[in-house]
Image (cartoon, rainbow, N blue to C red):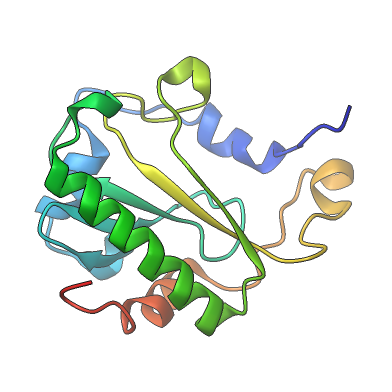
Length: 162
């Protein structure tokens, strides 16, 4: 059996969080997209880069509405999430030469959701050989581009109506 090691995520796991306020609700209300790494604002959902990425370009598609269950998505939200997922993969392929993607949602904390109370979808770009010895031997993940730079690089490609 192979194991996926992500020890750099311990910073996220070990960080005390104020769960009284949902970050997926508060970040878009702050109206500081650059600081908050919001790459795109749609009608029912927005795209934000993951502050603790598994790879460069790891982003999340998040409904504005606060809910946690998959069956609570409206038809309009489902359509926008799928359209934005398609658009994100095309943009990341073109801009970052991604060779593949992991796309998914973690439902509930036992399934790995770090913020289980607000449903969100992950888009994780992948490249051949993107895993290496660094996380295992030195608890270090190599992210070759700064989050602000990646966000700006991707933001310019999203269009208003996918």
